[in-house]
Image (cartoon, helix red, strand yellow):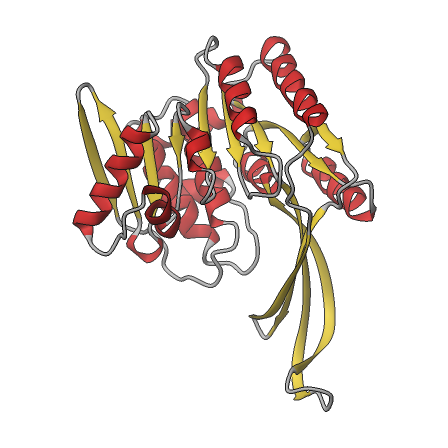
Length: 327
């Protein structure tokens, strides 16, 4: 690998555009000491409440934390949750001028956690497809950012909450292709056909299995699924995250498809929430900063190993990354 420290230092010179489903993560922290007399459920004594960025907003937060520059495009409701989300984006120094308002509610995921264990999660959302007017506004903003600002790569964060569609992907590729921009997608099952022609997708094992139609149960079926996704969607690469088994990268090399298995760097796993956001943010930022596909995968693997060791959506700082990588 090249000078890994130099690659990480290049993050500060790199600008990423993140497009997708914005989510507000709400955490209610407490303790349980009794069971409710009304139903056989624990009574959580609330001690603290936190709001964090989720979905595409967390991808953007990861980029900023790693030292990169980022602008985010998405849709929220006209409600109190939007106010909280926008304040969090502003506090992080994330350009939120591309965040649009719709009649739908802002997507909020509320997690109740007691004694470091998640007790329940409840979601407030409308995952219907955004209307054509909002789609036009998003694409117009993407075009503006590409023409007026120096953008090095685009991340599409698909949480299947209505923003990402076949029309959106086609529109983005029409704008990014002439500029030769790297386009990565954090995918969702059911939307895989939309991603044809992007640079890379980063599914987890379950998504790769369902997206390829191949049950992944061993290395042979994993390789078959990765190759099928790469060829079927005309991608440059597929990065499959495999939890405790690490990651597998499939990429084109002239007329051949090569694959690499990279073992996990996680020393402990407390919470995988947001790990996919960290992977695509770090991978794309590293690639846009001059890393090869394999180098970007290695760096993202180290970053993922850091965030899964913490409870809740977490981000990684350049100093942490350098430390665990021995830079």
